[in-house]
Image (tube, rainbow, N blue to C red):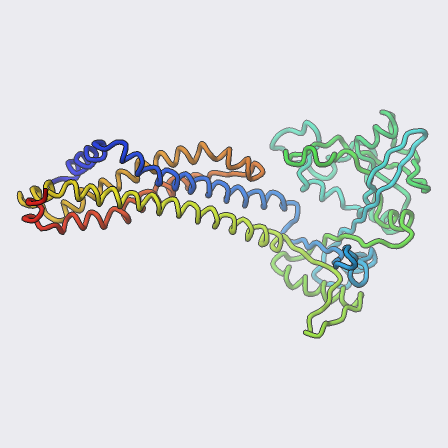
Length: 429
């Protein structure tokens, strides 16, 4: 019996019991659809993680104050992370190229009768370099065209490294902040009051828009007020605040070594001691892109494993359904098997006949499952913050899973049919 005839025979057998075949396929359909959805959600989660932390380069280390729970609230551990810590770091740590230092404070800014309450950002002179990586761009910027830090300046200029070192009383306004304070007039060269401190406006940023739809309503990139971090600390704080740093390492391949050097530097400055186990009680936290992505990817992998377990259960249930139906089919067609064996059919022909039937059921169920999985992805994505990504390789993989299910669960019934004794099979009623 050639392969074409085997397929014809298998198709007729499957089509003869449509309802039973449909119910048998249901488990495979659910399993394959789960595989498609699982892969899309897993890929989407990983892509979202990469997108979320793309602002942090491979050669950058984030350093912040470590807090601990004290009396029911989080309080800084040990000494604060200070402006001087960051200022002296490039000279003291050989692998550190430069350090971006920042701090912030909610303030009231005033010009004439116009007043705005805003969070003032104390930053270094290279702060605009970071804006290019923070999912914002100038409004109406041509799609696909790259932009640089200078493209974010609308009027005037940004402050210089010298102005940061000397604590110059200068500031740069966001587009909306300038409108709120100056009502459309040119603010460059004017002096505003920030709390009780006079500050010269030296520049205004262009109007910006978020490129990440998830951040559209979280914050307005145009409501900003930037000033040298040293100026912010000296004029707006009674007590020096803890700062936040982004350290740029000279060689990304040696970032772990750089972390060790920075730890040694900060431990010496902060006089960090060891605990009874010999571990340092650091009062700072260091994070790299690899650390963040590792944690997030681990969470994404756990989520994917959960979905994979659900898909596996569905496929096993579908496979058991296929095996059950094929065993029933073998029993119902015992006399037919006996006749075929009696007229010269070989055992492998019987095996192929029933195995092809099982594979046919699983493949049809797999095709339907693939379609169902693709259709259900938008619903699944809505339950996962809109994150799902179906890669082209996912469909062949799901199809292969369906094929494997048919082979694994159809093999035993097929072999059982082939091992029937022809004489006993012909006598079967």
